[in-house]
Amino acid sequence: MITQSRKQHKPNPLSWFVKQTMHLSAIASLAVSSSMIHAEVSQQQTDDNGIEINRDENTTEPSTTLPTIVVMAETNKQVTENTDSYTIPVTSSATGMGLSAKETPQAVSVVTNQQIKDQNSNTLIDVLKRTPAIQVSSVDGARNGLSSRGFAINSFQIDGLNTDFVQQAAMGEYSANTAMFDHVEIVRGATGLMSGSGDPSANVNLIRKRADSAVPKTELSANVDRYGQYGLSVDRSQPLSESGAVRGRVVASYQDGNTFIDRQELGQSLFYATVDADVGDSTTVSVGASRQHNKSKSTMWGGLPNYLSDGSKADWDTSKNGSADWTNWDSDNTYYFADIDHDFNADWNLTANASYNESDSSPKLLYMYANGDQQVDATTGLIFNLNPFHADTERKQFNVKSKLTGNFDALGKTHKLIVGGSYSKSDLDTFTYKSPPDGILPLPDFSDWDGSYPEPEWGERNRSSDVTTKEKAIFAATQLKPSDPLAVILGTRVSDFERSGVQYGRNVNTEAKHIWTPYAGITYAVNDNHSLYTSYSDIFKPQTQRDINGKFLDPIEGKNYEIGLKSESDNGALQSQVSIFRIEQDNLAQLDGGQIIPAPTLKKPTTEQRCHQSGCRSTSVWSNQRPTTSERWLYAF
Image (cartoon, rainbow, N blue to C red; front, side, top):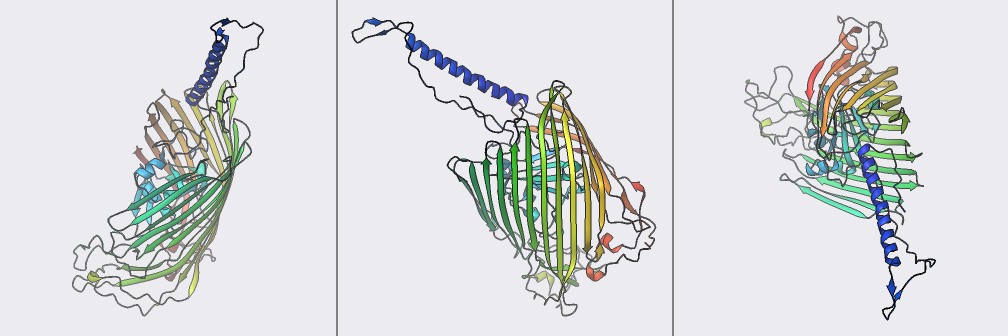
């Protein structure tokens, strides 16, 4: 008997050839075995005295039962664990369809589980620092800036579900522990087809580990560095039923210790658990949860002064820490998720994903700074200004997504199709504590600063941000194969975006209805190892600037034009890509003569409400009558 595994998606030619070979091998083995048995029982036999015994032609030959031969068909699972590989057969972050790197007409990088381990990338920031064409900058002790192709990265997903990372509040998302992820997929350029709103920079998609092992398995890891940072993690997989149809997995990780910066302590604790259950032969249900606490003690807010009052450049030790002993930037991230995966047949699959997460932080910080020509006094070592800050920030998100994917035959070829929809809602609340206007003690000599500065008595707690963001969309895409080497991908997304509320005294109510973000790409397989591609992708970003009549400007439209070459070795273990791209932005707001908006309802934020940059210009007029275009020509490898 020859059986196949449950997942029977339409294979690519190589996997089809492998599986057909396995089938033929199994059939050949059965044929050979049967021939051997028949030969043995058909031979003349002798009795104990050596007399030959001839069988009668009508005599029934003895039967033999062969053992069952099971041939497991490989599935197109997007899993990199236990492959020892730096590449992955297929990804879906760019188009939603499971395509190989050569079939995807856009620059895509995948950081596999093996690469994460080999490079000791314990957090998402560690992963992105080592990802091609991604720039990571350090803002201060707890915040980082991410950019690609000249634009900030603000599109993030977990298992394909849009997830809002609030970097300004440093709520720990960038420090997501990689112990619970199988791999990370990064699509560069405009990614509106799958991610919706954002900048034409990149989309980062984190893929969780799953309970996919039907046998008990445990993995332990530990690390320590020269500064005293140490960690331990355990990853346990276990079947929860005798048949292995129900499986569980638990990941626990702990990290703590000092850094090269004086008095700074960083740490993490993670607990992740998930259960996968095969409900029948065609349906798998997954549920799980994770909680991560990020510890950040005596963390600097901002950097150190660059110059002294006599004009000389400051020469601080690398370990110099400008924070006080009582400062911290701790945060917590909790996620709950549930997925359903159903195969209608060998060609069509339906998945539904939902997640809910809460993130919160309550930082206590101290910022030392100088205004204008103020610097640290070179003689006394005194610094001029202090800004203590204390806030409570909480963000709640709900995300749901469903998609139908499949293969269909037309004109003698097999094509792919995906249709789906998504909905996301994010609530962000921030409360700030008043610091005493008087009673802040002067700083001692900053040259001998050791962090021993008293914590101020915080005043009343006031709401400073209350923002709700909603985005819903439907999308569809198809890969058409006019011929074997040529493939055409066409797709689009229609989105409704709405943001409402107040942020630091600034009204952020804005909406964008029925925004189309088209996608088009062509790939041509030159041979088995090389393919050429070209593509156009689109993305939109709502803005809060207004025109002379007080009306919000249309969303910024980001356009990405790209051509490139992708190559891989015979076994797919080595992949490369080179691309040339052009990015344009339309409807980018520009100041229009500093005119006053005649809208009495607009509220100008005060300095005490900590408005920044465009938040303090609510009375200026912006125009999109003649939208400017920002263009970039770059090479990406």
